[in-house]
Length: 456
Ligand code: GLU
Image (cartoon, rainbow, N blue to C red; front, side, top):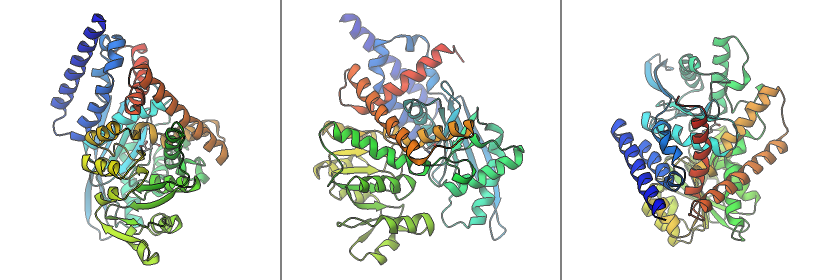
């Protein structure tokens, strides 16, 4: 008993020192600090039980990216004016496979955002059970309001630099906020042109006609709903007849809504970066899809076609809509402590994080203390990257699975992630806490691989 207490104190001190070093070495990178803090604190029970992770300096190594690449992305707009954006790729951890993770085009992108995403990705990818390491990238380029030609010129310029660091066995990017099928298409074209070879597995999220996987578009949203469904079923509950609020209206949000509706839920709200729509009778997904996927319109247009719905400027208010299930699928830190309290007081039963780190540390605390079923991002939204790994497998085999084959595999992967998180939480003394469970389950595999490969 005394030994155990000692070990825990040592582990706590070790975590503290590593975290303080991260803060000192990466000043002002608040999102990165937040992601590191969330993970490190939940690892204390593992470190006390297995001091080898301290002995081999695993934490010091795991918080430092293997490589961070930044580069200039010059491009010319339709008026002939030259612009310069900044490109990033963080190659965070390659212990269990080639770097894998999306590219984000959004004005908020900076080193802190890319590093928090790359760090999270390392554990998320491990949880999928697929052989993929952690990476992330992007640019502070704002695709909003840009013409098709401007998007093409920008992505070609971006790829002209990024290609040097990519490869199907090295680093395999994909989409994220602001990067969808159109951008991946332009990037794949430019990569192929520069390399002079058709390396299908170098990017995922490709179009079906040139090497993409059926089911990849739907995977993050469907996967998130499959995960939440596992949490609900553990309490004898289901989506059937429930009221759901989904933030965002991008790829993750749209396919979460589609699957939730298929499972009998009523989705009453969704949003974009300007505001949200609310329809207590249930929103029409076909309209949202047309506005967002085809016309690239603002969500405020929705109410013109559906007068029973209301549009509200600003995004935060969406969490004041009463619901049983909340699926934050827009962006980081969109649910703060106050929003979490309102959700809880309105009777939320389950939260599934479709976006990356959408809840602040304080918000997570509120959910856990209130006994809300909480599916953390790195588990709940892992379906997207999991199917990206399946796309890589199909590309290697030069073969394509049918939609139902991919969807069945995705479903099995999400069930498995849920099971691993539940088991790890239980084994390390935090039953029901999937934040701790997912972090530990994701960590141990990467950490063991790092130890096996020596100090590299
Ligand atoms: N951007 C997605 C994520 O956050 C998908 C990454 C991928 O498919 O590589 O996991």
